[in-house]
Amino acid sequence: MPRQLAELAIEREESRVTLHSLTSITLGVPDVEAVCGYYEEFGLTPSGSLSDGRRRFATVEGGEQLTVAHAPQRRLLEIGVGADDLDDLDRIASNLATLGGEFKRSTEELVAHDPHSEIRVSIKIAPRIVQSPAKAVPMNGPGRPDRANGRAPAIERTNKVRPRRLGHVVVGSLNQEASQEFFTRGIGFKVTDQVPSLASFMRCSTDHHNLLLQQAPLNFLHHTAWEVDDVDEVGRGASAMLEEHPERHVWGLGRHHIGSNFFWYLKDPAGNFSEYYADLDCVLDDQLWKPSVVDGARGLYNWGPPPPPSFIRPDDLAALMTGAHAPR
Ligand SMILES: [Fe+2]
Image 1 (cartoon, rainbow, N blue to C red):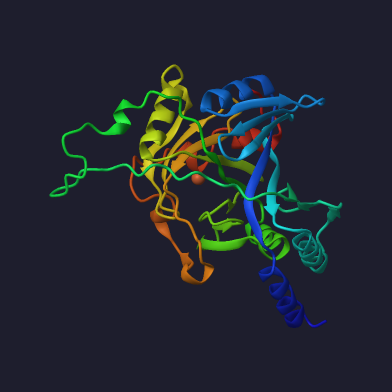
Image 2: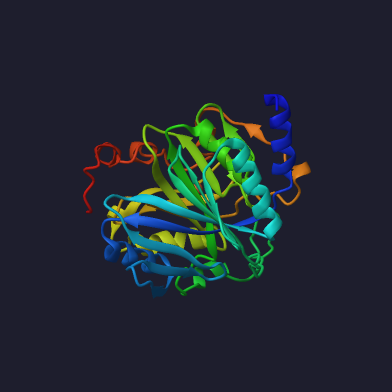
């Protein structure tokens, strides 16, 4: 088939794939114990160990969304994506076959491997995550005393911050363009916004992004992001994590321009960044969202402290590149 016709056929198939969530991630780290302790403190709930030593953690509403496994150096081993029915897996198989991608198909799962970012993707039939609505918090504004005669409820909160669910992962890819093609044309992700020649924000749900691919000198995991109720929970969660470990601080508090979310980034013992976030843009109707191309500093943030150089280029990148990374 001529290339143009093949492309049209792929696009038709791609548009019919209905993905609904980023269900899980598997992190590979040198020191499983230390990393597990960190994510428990971060607010995830230990939910068991597998016979091969992998450890699992649950969020409040997303179920078991984090698996921590042993690996010689830190890396993202797998992401899980939820689809509605078996027809979706058939369509993904067809798209990947047309692209020449490798995959394995069983009755209820399709496992594919992106050779460019080296990420394994497991697509399974899964129930949609149902979230209970966060309570609307009244806020005073000039000439608008919506919370008259009372203190802000947020300052009275004493409960531990626990992420509602996994939101997104950000990875560096040696070939961002090729990885983007794998995830869009192959798996069925949609591009929400782009930074030219550098990054693509893609979604497999109504979230602004579930996967951000950025061009990098090596394939590596930049950060994982976990949703909390609001900006106060972002601040409370990060403050609690930093109380006895100020060295965990990476960047925050701030607000991104692309995606609009409040953020605070921390660092786990293996060197992976983990983000508490709130108020991310969501795309309920594809027709109403206008993808944009964002350039310059806005590609990174709207307001907040200047990002440290180690956020752009994590301190351990050189070590990861030589494979000499050691746990800290
Ligand atoms: Fe993020």
